[in-house]
Length: 402
Length: 226
Ligand SMILES: Nc1ncnc2c1ncn2[C@@H]1O[C@H](COP(=O)(O)OP(=O)(O)O)[C@@H](O)[C@H]1O
Ligand SMILES: [Mg+2]
Image (cartoon, rainbow over all chains, first blue to last red; front, side, top):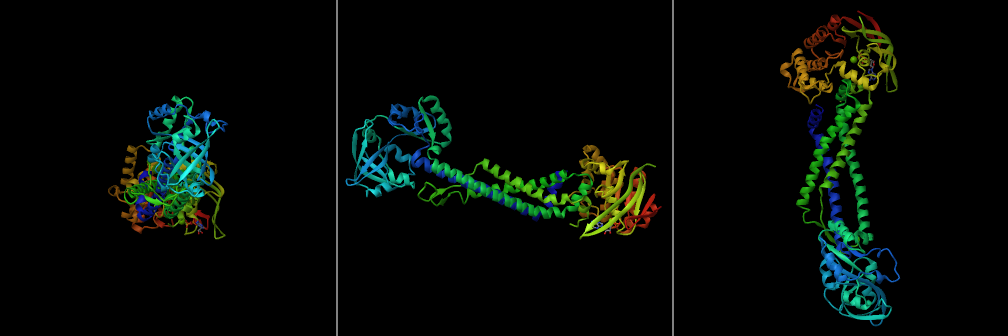
């Protein structure tokens, strides 16, 4: 009976119901879309972080990342070939990238600068790390004596692609060692730290330079980042002495901060949208309820409690809101299947130096969240509107001319 | 005869634009169970105010009113709602039907809220509508009915609740005299046939003539009774 009254009352004033519906639909759509946009953006950030430098995560000996070691090479990974092939056997792991980081003097013949180098499997990495931004020349690939430098570093040493550089470094035994290499590429990440002091050479060169067979760490490339937790689990269980760290932690500065930033931004936008929905629904519900003051008075004269009336109003609000929310969600899904389908370009974001394409990414969880929040806001809006009528004595409500 | 309502020094005033209007002044009264009582008096004499107090829809400000021997100031909000739901039927001057419900549904609504089981409910609704002569109009909405028909629905709605008392505030004022007379007859029969206490506010002569008892009001005071 309550249901009948609620539904028919909604149909009675079509224009007003339409306004409520539209308010709720727009609110839901805005929340849903914004959430989807953020998720798409985060996905791009994640892709960028994963495919620019870190991979989905890295494997090193336990505690290696936290400790400051006098002789770090003692904590490097032994038998890298065996570890690599075992890591590759873990389901979900597609690529393994052994790495060896060291410091060296980079010299152009007349001037030298201290820099951080990393020995990599150039051929393997060039494909996976496709978002690294090579501004001149090429990635390292299989250039045996090649070196790829950060833009700042190249600039400081006045180096161009094709020129030769000399590396000077200490072996792990403390003796001086050197290598003569040719610049094949210059990269630009947007991170000053990397651009001003980082370079890549082939892993065998690095190992020779340091006089070691070990590698420092192994970056992992997964088919899907969602598999990370499982992969980490397997590594903890079966690789004694090794631990795995996801890129979110490795790339705290860019990725995690971006996540936090976007989430904070979403929270603010969400609060604004919900506030507007409450206000909008309150507005239309107020006139709808004022018009029904006498009806409400009559209901109360016949024994309906304030709570009963509030339930009736809430039910009406919820019906309209549910319909509106559904419309809002559908519109967003349709938009995303049509005009937003191919994504759109965004200006460079944190850690990304070029404009990039992003997509709206929608999940059912977001839809439920958006619809639920807006529904609650709409019900709150209608309840607030009902309070005024409920405050007056019943006889006053009955006397009121609608 | 036992009394349904007993009032002692009841006063009621409204504040409107900073002006205090005394609608009821130091009123003592008694209303008997099972009788048809008419509250008579000119417009503004306080009939509605008194009726609203008796229907628990206007808060009591001063004095005492006993309902079935109990002081109404002692009822909790929950008890008041229960009394309104089960023991009182209202008939208003302007009907106050729920527009979006049919005649039948209007009558059924409060029965459903009384949690009368569906089968019994349908029975009560049908007999109430038959009793007011609207069996054929059960599926019409208020907007499709005349004033007289709407007031009949309102009476059927009050009757179906099987209340102890029916409070009718000028139920014929919005109707032509023939229709008004019919409605009045219904209310009188309601009292006689169903043993319901009916309290009706009206300045209609016919009503005054048919009532068991008439309380005459003027300026919120009892002028006399018949
Ligand atoms: N809500 C109100 N606010 C202010 N004055 C009121 C209100 N209701 C009734 N009155 C005044 O109280 C007096 C009694 O009114 P009422 O009980 O409605 O009389 P009746 O029903 O006999 O016409 C009148 O003077 C009327 O103007
Ligand atoms: Mg009156």
